[in-house]
Length: 205
Image (cartoon, rainbow, N blue to C red; front, side, top):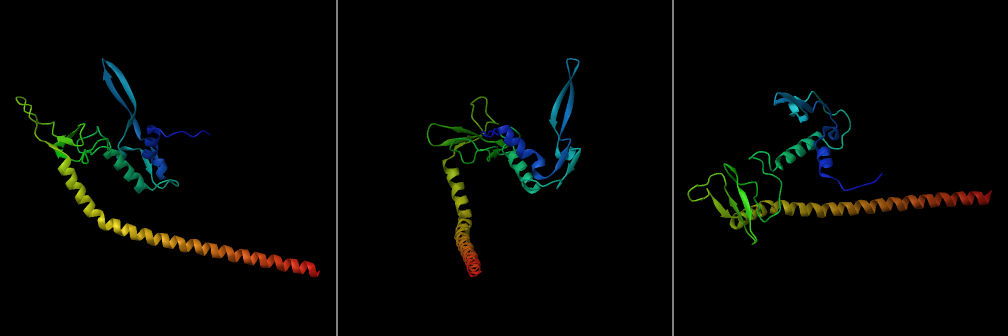
């Protein structure tokens, strides 16, 4: 067996295949027929919606992940699609814009990255042909800073709780390791006593 770096399609196929969530599925794809230039053209492997699958049996076998986790993965994958729908945030991309894919003006605002630190959000849907003035355009500096401050304020109590839980978990783990060592030492002493007793019995005989 030779291991290699995972490729996009292999990972995507693993995350979207229900078999890894313990489900048996049949009929996930179909063949689409269309007519071009008077000839029938078949397109194989067209994905169907889940409600159109021919067979779906959950808990058919032991899965690597739960069905809930599988559903969560599908939602995340759909939301990461940059070219599918205007209401999808899209995957995170390079650049300084924090709210890329999240701001709307009817459609998603586009982002322009400059060589400087800032980026600019703009609405490219409505443009005045005479002046080429756009509906809205603004720098990301103030709005990104405001959103960042609100996020940090919201998660601060959770961060403190997580830190306290981590300290508690480490203490518990340390106590458990100490208990395991004490049991191992006790077992070793017992085995040594048994061995010494057998030697004494053999010598007496």
